[in-house]
Image (cartoon, rainbow, N blue to C red):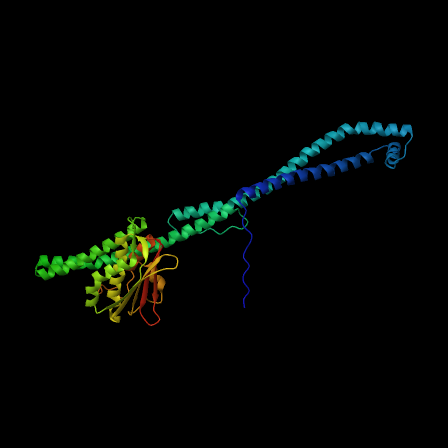
Length: 392
């Protein structure tokens, strides 16, 4: 059994605290270096003066040091010699104090420059990475500094998260642009070819031909409307009018309207609708449920069975759940959640009539209501799609 990893209890100090500690340390270091230097030089100067004493003055100094009284002549010689040396010694001590003070200031300044550069290095890295990011390269990242202030660490983490988000958005935008071009190309090609053939007299300009071309126009309209819905979701303008409603009643109304097309596909609908009060935009929630029902009709009709449930969650929220016996989702569920133009059929054909934007639109509506969309496969076969809504 593996031992649990110990969590790091150390937390980076605020930048102001680190700066204060560094300044206080430099001050104490400067005063300490100056004191040690002056003390050492004073002792050295005192020893030098003692060595320069005349023999009788040196003897008198030794007797005084031992606590005995020397004779008067020797004591006078000692006093005169010390008086003569005192003024030059004081000047030397003053000069030494100045020299050692300047030396300690230089040493502290060098250490301070090193600490300042160490603190500012992550900011320089951030500036460089921001320039790279501004040039369009969203792969730029900054290494998390060790021993930096809390603010610097938080700034680096936020920058890296922003760069990761921008890189993901760029990938999704590139994919979406390619997918939009792919989705629009087919109906536009059919329309252009059909109209050109009618003008050239190849196709008769009859009711059936116009109806076929109208189907392509309707497909284009669905794509444009779904893209508009996703754009409103990005701008946080998708849900505008909330009201309290019963999710069970709303789902029942959607199923009643969709029952003819479900029966036409051979789907038997089974319901278990429990009352669940939510605060939601009824038109958007109706759009999401209808999209899931239509998605089941297109891709799960082969199973011949569809179960729709509503329930109240323990936290007071609600869930709308659809279960089918169709082919289910692929193993790579991330592709379903991320790619707006994903379709259940690998050929991406338009045989089922879908735009590939249905699940993305439903997910956007769920998120706009503070909820989320979940996708899963049933153990006995088929798929489970659920809209989770937050409490009213």
